[in-house]
Image (cartoon, rainbow, N blue to C red; front, side, top):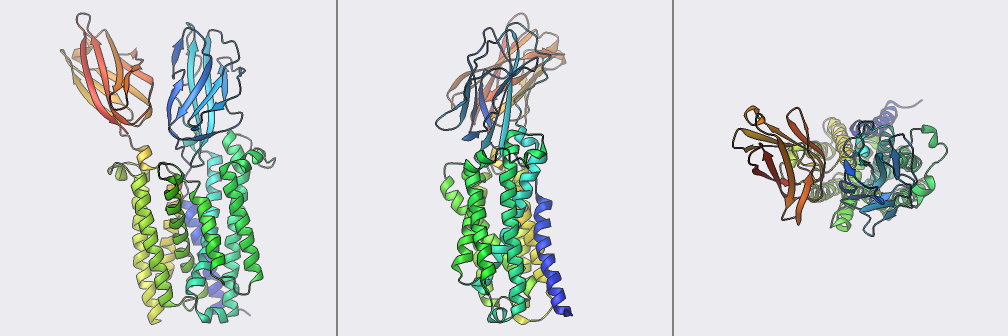
Length: 535
């Protein structure tokens, strides 16, 4: 018969594993597309006299073209013949020649690509050739389909959840035991078996997550609506040859070797170099496919993020070891040094990553990423507080183990919010509050509204007040930026019910921009301007 203590320990192990996994899954969010469209040719909504020879899409960061994803569709839903797509040397522009003979009609061009942070982005542009109406095609401004979520992005997040959770339960626990395990834990056969079982469970989760990610990435990139495509391994070959696929295969190989090591060793956390090296490699495969992989200092950022993930994994893994094996599992002083070192690394690398991803400062509370980051900081503070009480419990052997359980729950929250941040658009890439300004006219005022001050597609609306509307006959506008070196960017306005609107503008770069407006009242045009910052 199992002793009550042993039963409680097994129950605690199940609770520990479940808390980490459920905590991360609750926090998982649909992946967001992070490569912004900054230019197209033809421009969105263009009305052309002659058919274009090619179609191109330009993004603000390198992307990987999804094979077979470039399409040109007519108003009758016919897919037209295109040449072989080409990608620029810096991988920011996708261009394809039009081989079909385009007649006067409405056309829709689409493309899908994988951004540097492994999220799939998809864009579409509509244009017309000749003097035809485009009302038959219900296509608006370029759409970033990767931001819309859906079942495939949820599947990708499940794979990421399995990977993070498994890393904590495997390499996190093993490294914590290697650095701070007590001789008593080594002598206790049952304790070693319990910890080994949890470590094997963690290895299994990492392996399953990597395989699942490999199989769903292809259909996810293609935008397939057929879930059976996973069973047919569609896109697996292309995924395996991509940078993401290589990282997933490295993760799978490392964790399988670690699993064999754990099975064959009586004490699987000795020598320390084995689980520590495995942890560093697995953490790298996470870091190299996230936000750290983009930007001017991407190499250092990947190293920083790898350290951040590994330190957090060891910290929470040590708490799992205490819950599963009891307070005699870790020596108080060595564990205090390990936990404090992990905390210092988490804070230092976290501050650096926040500085890269949060700009300007008010994006911290005006974007989803910033608010989630504030939540993570709060959770880290809670972990520190509970860790302080847990250290007192470990040292004095007095009081109940509630601080350790509370620290584990707070750690699971930190891990959950980390997963959400990995799936969210960074604050500096999402910040762009709407603009509303008022320009004075000779008679009345003109309200200028832009739905975003973010670079990329923007909807501009010009609305004269009642006094100005009685005399205004036409409005035209252009954008310019001395800082960006753009002398004139046309703004195509359409009047409807006294409002002039443009949904076809794509602002290519962050800078200070000037919206110059010419208001014609039938006698003498009035020129006014609105200056604002585009992020």
